[in-house]
Image (cartoon, rainbow, N blue to C red; front, side):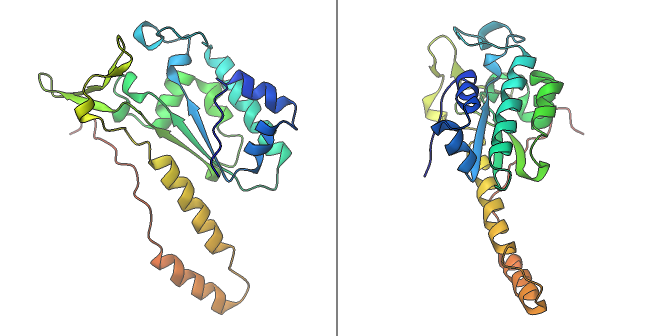
Length: 219
């Protein structure tokens, strides 16, 4: 079952504060929580990224929403092995996002408090991804990757070259963690069981992983 909550941040936390709302109970019971961090919601950014948004936050305010959500989910179901795929969305609208690490982008755009908030769950259960639903196109004049998003129309600049960027990898990572965890749970103190599991893990077919582009000034 897949459940999507689009509460623009603050409402989700308000519902979560009740601790018995359908929102928080569904999230607390989930095996995978995909959290979308939208840089265009930050007041610290200017220009076309802000667009006509009516929900903008300072870095500290955004981080507090994420921190509160994590704390509620971890407290209400401390026994739950839940994986958090944290996605920096609209990466096409961030300068050189494909040449920078996701954690570096979090630190630079969302701030130190957001970095700390993402450390509330066990680090093995949290991973940050750089994603874009619009994707990129190549500027043939400058041989640079540019956003395929047209801010004036709110649509693709070139719908013939629409390739969403890295949107599949958060799911690939989460599915793999769940599958590997399930295999490892079968391990007992029996030497033969452990050997059998090791053989199964050797045969395990891993999901595709992210492909990072080398910086333009790489030697």
